[in-house]
Length: 497
Image (tube, rainbow, N blue to C red):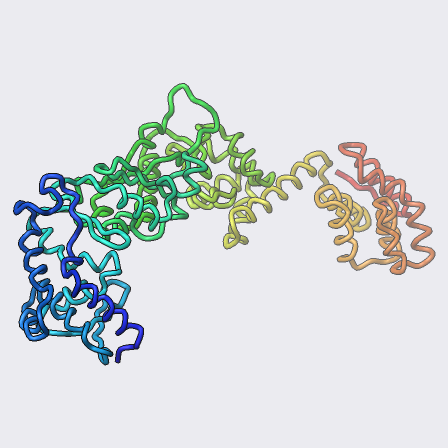
């Protein structure tokens, strides 16, 4: 069922066609046929036929409407001018749009759609595109008409303006490329127009060439457009005498699939990025390309850019110089880089940091991220470094062992770890005194007093100087401090060797 507005729109157009049936033909911009007046004009015969419809009565128009070509579609549409209301309209889906039209006579539906929706710059071309293809003509559709340049591919200036307006490309480029020409972007060279259209990845929606070509017909469209990607994909951290990746950066991708509308602007740009990355990755020269910047082999510059944790930095300093192929990575984090090489180098990195304890860490924590495992290895290394400055003991009396474990925990994990050792111990009076002495030495006694009786606090205060020495001394001085605490606590035993 036709709406009143749709029917009236078609009827008003039919009235205009009755005055001038040749309105559906393109305006001539071909100097060789002088405005379409000469018989050399490809549309001269069709123009004559359409002009012959002017003034015909309804019966004569109906006979013409039974023909399948453009003249039949125009005649059938002209018949609608006399109808007060068009009750029924057919619909035809073309691309993502539905067009309505009134079926009159036997003309091809495609021609009827084109004639009755002549206000649409895209669909109106269906009226004559078959003739243009047969005669190798160039057609251009603008806001309210079509233009023909015959065998000349140079588009009329108003068509170039029309396209730029439709594509929202002021001065031929998207706002991001106008602001920064180094930004990677599609450069679509329109040779006959002398124009290059530029769109960055974020502004790319669909295929720009397809967007242009829906308003033109050219028998040699492939020869008229070239697509490439321009801009800087990878910046240099510093200038090098010989750029290792210069050749890889200069690569381009074949634009056949793009020109055939089998690939969008975004996909074309992405394919270029992938090809550049692939060309770098296949090189034999190891370079570090991280987050769009090439650092050459400057590991420290990469670390400055990533701000890794101490354990990540130590692992990357060991890992990156070992690489014999380029590293190319986007959205990089220290853990993301480590994860890429973890299967090959993970065990070596952990054992390098934590020694034989590293194998145990991998066995117990293998499901954690590389960064988490390396943090444990780093803590183990710190513990080993601390213990290396302390004397070793074959066996210690229980009270001395307790004090030694608190002092060692503090050196490795600070006051928090030392307090954890205290809280995990089953304590008698003497152990409580030792524990309180350490709490005083670490300034952590304030919130712990309620756990200790008066005698334990007093005894702990007496032992505090020894606890403080145990938190600071190393080597033989540490051994002496431990023995002195044990003796001051009332024990006659010795710490031994």
